[in-house]
Image (cartoon, rainbow, N blue to C red):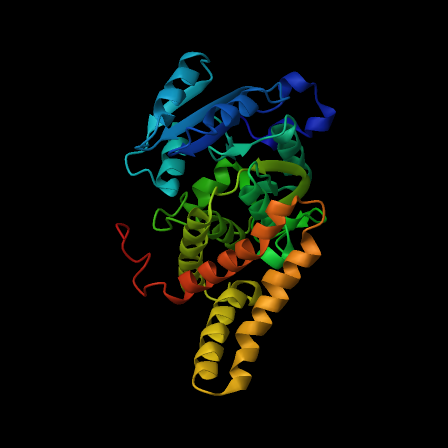
Amino acid sequence: MNQSLHAHGSPQDEPRSTWPAVSVIMPVLNEERHLADAVGRIMAQDYTGELELVLALGPSRDKTNQIAQRLAAGDPRIVTVTNPTGRTPHGLNIAIKAAQYSILVRVDGHSLLPADYIRIAVEAMDAHGADNVGGVMAAEGVTAFEKAVARAMTSKFGVGNARFHTGGEPGEVETVYLGTFRRSALERVGGYDETFVRAQDWEMNHRIRQSGGRIWFTPSMRVTYRPRPNIKALARQFFFTGRWRRVVGREHQGTLNLRYLAPPLAVVGIVVGTVAGLLGFWPGWILPVGYFLAIPVGGTLLTMGGLPLKTRLCLPFVYATMHLSWGLGFLTSPPGLGLNRDA
């Protein structure tokens, strides 16, 4: 059953058995901790259309691939393919090529889908004529540090006003978390650009919009996201995201706005102000002190409600790490990054 949505009409008006077939695609690397739970949520979807899961397995250093093979052996709907580079855009393109169906649900190995996720995505895609539908990246932590990251990643103090982070009204947007795509849209723009080791989702959605497609945000699609477990991993994540977001801005002129420029401006202000202060120009201290009072301290006071004490103590460090790592990555992004596919 490899037919488009519009060939069926609206899912709300149809018997559930006639809903379109769906392929879930998941690039996987070093996901030993979360993979079984992520796959279990996918295979337990409240969706009666045909469903398959394609796992693109990278060269993991843990037991991820053994877990994936065990899961595939226990369910014929699960297919595994090899992603030699381990990079996300390569894995996505490999999985897309291996997938059978015309609707593609992109999922990560540490994302936990609610039971109605695919059903809501199919309904919204058809209702709004969208080429990609996505929802909220609902960060949830387990440890005190992860809970602090989760709170920061769902706060405007941490990530700005992107609806896929903080929620909001349904509607057309620039990008969404993960996404449920029409295969025709991906084929129209040539798939994921493998140049973009990071920020490939934003870049892909930009090209879909440039080609006349529509990206639709639906807040009822909430995906549980597991944050990075320590400050080093968090800093690395945001540093490289900042680096690659600058590449997107370079390749697609006019796509940078204040939300993306705020972290690098904060880094510049802190450095310049600190140097000026150390050289005896005392007003220079206004910039670094003002930042830390306004964001790590002020943001913590305004967003720490309901958190245990240990998590509250982590929160200022999480905010500062996210902002400054992203800003530093953006500022130090090499001019040639993304120009060579092996970079």
